[in-house]
Length: 130
Length: 92
Image 1 (tube, rainbow over the protein chains, first blue to last red):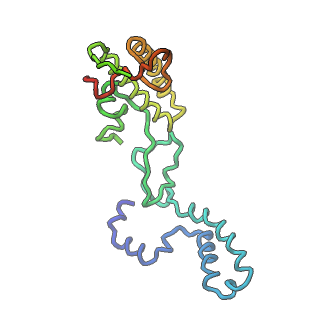
Image 2 (image 1 turned 120 degrees about the vertical axis):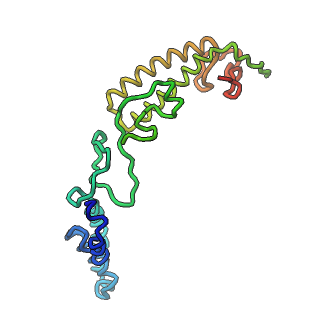
Image 3 (image 1 turned 90 degrees about the horizontal axis):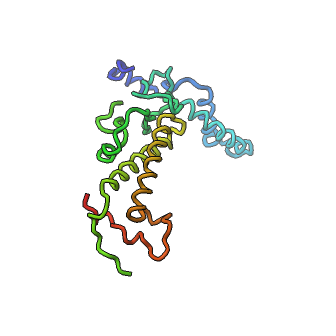
């Protein structure tokens, strides 16, 4: 994956055809089509069946959200230092969102040193080990 | 109404400092356990810290006065909390 990051050809592909970069999912296509149809088609917009499509469209929203989440097979790198003590699935992380790692219970400072440093945990004292 | 001047030489400051240190450690373990409620090592540590902290706080309050206004006990003829030094009156 990292080899592809500076690859200009790969970046160009991404800009040229972003739709095809998203993993092909029938749910995504169906949802997009149903959202567009009432607005662009005068038939469905004027008729009663057009309204019945609104709940259908809303019910597919979670599926769309889920399908966009990165997974291991998409080639996203794992979060450094992650562990599954908290049971968090790091493969579901998304771009442009902030995440906090699950802290491990490692060594601790003495109570005196902890009060001086402002943390009990060497893991939370910069420079951070992971 | 009158509050007597604080003579800090009468206070066991090393004991007070030890209490502050253990309080901080207990809070840190408290916060860790909020997100790791089943962590056996952290539970073991906070149990030991709290046991020692309660002992030292009882010792301090018996010798001096209440460490907290809230939950202060045995306040018969005078509100003793007000006789205790404010943080800025303590020179560590």
